[in-house]
Length: 301
Image 1: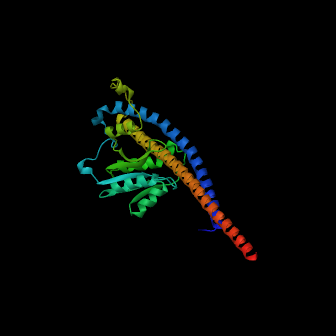
Image 2: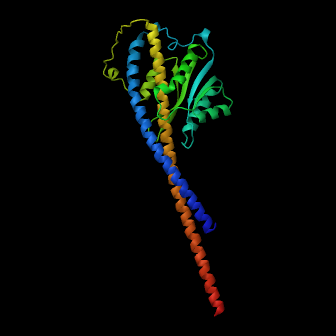
Image 3: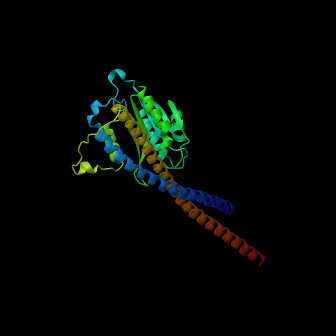
C-alpha cells in the first residue's frame, strides 16, 4: 500500500484535474448553447431555400447550369472531392474518431481528394497518405456564412472545371446533446432527391405538401435565366456547407461537454476511492503506533 504522503499527493492531483475538466465542461456547455441556437436559426433558411428551389427546378431538364447536371459518360473523371469537417482540438469524446472512421471506410478503392476543415481530420488524412487539396484551420467558433466563402468557392470552381464527378461533405449531424451522427452528403451535382433528404434530415416538413397545397409557381425571369439559376445553385451549395459546419460545431461542443462531464464524475469517484485508501492507510499507521507503544510499555513493566 502506498504511503499516506503519496496518496495525499495523488488526491491533490486528481482534484486539480477535476477543476480543469469542470471548467471545460462549463465552457463547452456555454458554446454548445450558442452553437445549437445558430444551427436551429439556419434551418429556417433551409426551409425557404428548398421551397424556392423546388418551384424553380420542376423543369430540371431545361436547366443548363453544370451544378445541377451529373457528368456524362464521356466527361467522367473517376475522382471525388470530399470536404472533411473535424475539430482543431481533442477532448471531445468520439466526435472526431467517428467521422474520420466513416471517411476512411469510403476511401477504399475510390480516387478521392480531401479538403480538411479542422486539424484532427488533416492529421488523420496525412497519416494514411491521403491526398489533401487544401486545409482550413482558422474558422471562428461563431461562424458566419461569409467565413466559408473560400471553402464553397473552391468546391464550386473545382467541380465546374470538370476536375471531379462529385463533391461530398463528411460532417456530424447534431441530433441532441447526447446523440450525434456522422454522415456523408453529396452537395454537387445538386440532386433534388439528395436535397430533399438533406432538408428533411434537419427536421423540416413541407407544410404545403403535407396539406396537398404545393402547386407549381410560374416565375417571371428578367435577364439571363440560366445565369440566375446558376447563382441560386451556388448560394444553395454555400448554404448547405454552412449548415453542415453549424451541425458539426454543435456536435463538437455537445460531445466535449459530455466528455468533460464524464471526466469530472470519474475524477470524483477516484477521489472517493483514494480518500478511502488514505483513511485505511492512516488507520493502519495509528494501529501500528499504538501496538508499538503498548509493546514498549509492556517491556518496561
